[in-house]
Length: 480
Ligand SMILES: Nc1nc2c(ncn2[C@@H]2O[C@H](COP(=O)(O)OP(=O)(O)OP(=O)(O)O)[C@@H](O)[C@H]2O)c(=O)[nH]1
Ligand SMILES: [Mg+2]
Image (cartoon, rainbow, N blue to C red; front, top):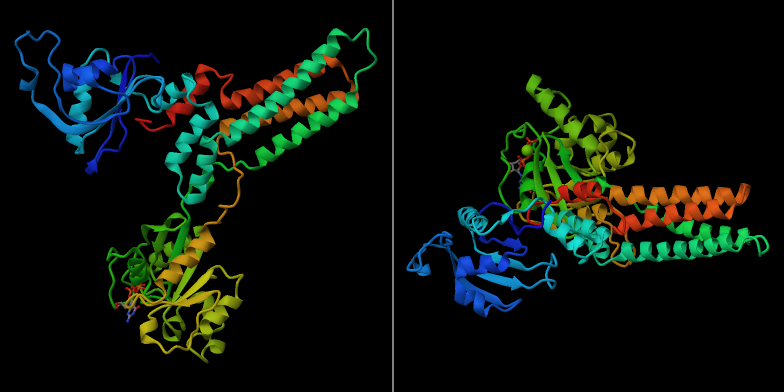
């Protein structure tokens, strides 16, 4: 990867009010001149927001007489110049905010690439340059991807803690402690002949304290699994109002609704934003006692399959009529349930071990029912028609799916690479402790501690190879 000037869109392709394009490298000033003219470059000030008309650059061989304003405009846009090293990458940077039309973004980038030797950026190349220019360490650079991909608030807060250097600080302080131990061990090596045996027990205690820090950090590791959006499944008898509820939660008529039982055939997934983050909400085909035909049987099978994956299973129950004889999981106990319109729910709640057991019950169509089913910790009266209970249902889902760990100042690690480095450090520490226990030798101990220190340092990138950098930044999006 070379150090030529790079350009890339920072925003995804698509129509929006505004898009963003970033340029970084030694030729940024040439780009300003080529797009906006000599006068713009002569008066440009770092970090000043400017409005200008970006024009197609004149060809390098254009004659003196060719007036710049004759070139057609690409867009009228806002731009900001950052002078290195006071920029994201540490180099000169130009950020441009054209109108959010993919055609404009394409033309702008095409025009910029014709200037000097500007080329398209590789994924993550801006952040890679930021790391290489000392704007952030490697653990922070990795957390930039976490900030972008956080699916909920607690992930986002964690990502910000990492970006703020929470992990880096702890790792650097541990590496310092290891360095201290190494230095003293090396002193002992030098003066081994003159002094009495080193105090191995004291070394052991110090190293054990570092070990427990490393183990604690390793324990926090949460990999890609946490990035999976939580899955909430609405299920229940045909016609219970599942699709209507999904639409009501979403606030739009996305899913087909009718009074014909069996309207929903396949499960339908929509995305919903709760306070804590985004979730997948799945509306399923009604589960009846008996399939009316082969297709019906397949639909019900699909519903059962997706239920198995659910993080939160919500039974939509429109009352005894719909539930009786329809939910196979409930049917066995139905005689008991005939007493009142919500006794079916009680039966369901009791049979927690069954496959279809809900985490929560929605008494749907509450506008049509008597108030005989009160809300409680596990159930709620909801009407998709009047909106009763919808906010409470969202709150309940939010509480069940997103732990509120605002108070915690701690972080968890998310990178496989950082985890591997910590494991290397731990292995070295364990070898050192084993040496102390069995066959203490200052030289060997000093060697192991050096390995531990290198493993810790590689987390923040004090030691890193081209291969490692390549694999980290290749996972980023273009423009970051
Ligand atoms: N009054 C009233 N009617 C509702 C409510 N929710 C749904 N309905 C009606 O109940 C009928 C069935 O609604 P759907 O949302 O299609 O039910 P479903 O559970 O998705 O049904 P299937 O897809 O067949 O399993 C429709 O006629 C809806 O208009 C509600 O809260 N109040
Ligand atoms: Mg439906």
